[in-house]
Length: 170
Image 1 (cartoon, rainbow, N blue to C red):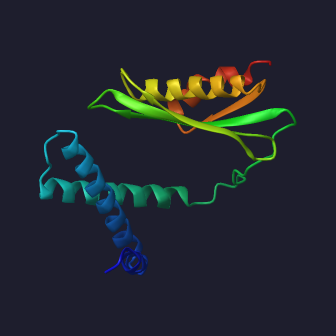
Image 2 (cartoon, rainbow, N blue to C red):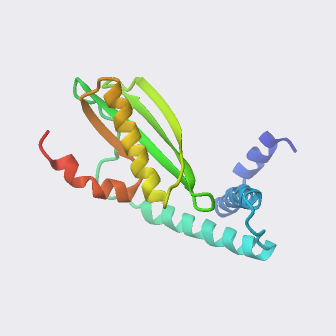
C-alpha cells in the first residue's frame, strides 16, 4: 500500500482503532530515535502496552474535553497597533542534554515579521529549553526594534511563572 492508501484506510477505522494506529506510528518513530541514541530497544509487549495506554488516555482526554463549557472558543484576535506576538517553543533531549528553540514573530495583522531557530547545549531539563526559547524570542523581537511584545508558549510552567509579568503595568 502507498502512504496515501494507509491514511485513507486508517481514516475509515473506528476512532479507537485510529488512535491506536496513530499512537503506534508515534511510538515506532520514538523507538527508532531511542535506539539511534544508544538506548535499549523496548520489547514488543512493552510497546503494545504503551500503545494501548497512551491511546486510551488520549481518547479519555478528548471525551472529557468535548463537553460544552459555556465559554467562548479561543480565537485569534488582532493585536493593538504597534504590538507583535512571539510564538515560541523549546525542545530537550534527556539523553544528550541538548535541544533547540524556535520562534515566530507576527505583527498586528498576523503577518510573519521574523522566524528563527537555534541549537541549545548543556541543558538541564525541558523547562530550561523553554526558558531559553523565551529569551531567544524576546531578544529576536528586540533586535528587530519591537518594543511591545506579547509572548505565547505551549509550556504551562513558563506560562504560570510569567503570569505576574503579564499583569504588571507596561
